[in-house]
Image: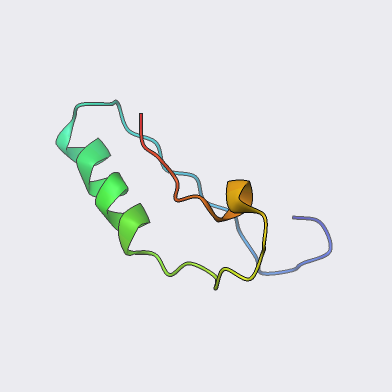
Length: 50
């Protein structure tokens, strides 16, 4: 992240089917989502999980 001193980007991954993967999915579902203001239904569709 050039030009942003003190900032870091962390990426966490886990093997599917593991407890760590389940925990990351729960964390993702708990994250706040921006308000939906688009009139495009494709953009407003909820995210799906494989």
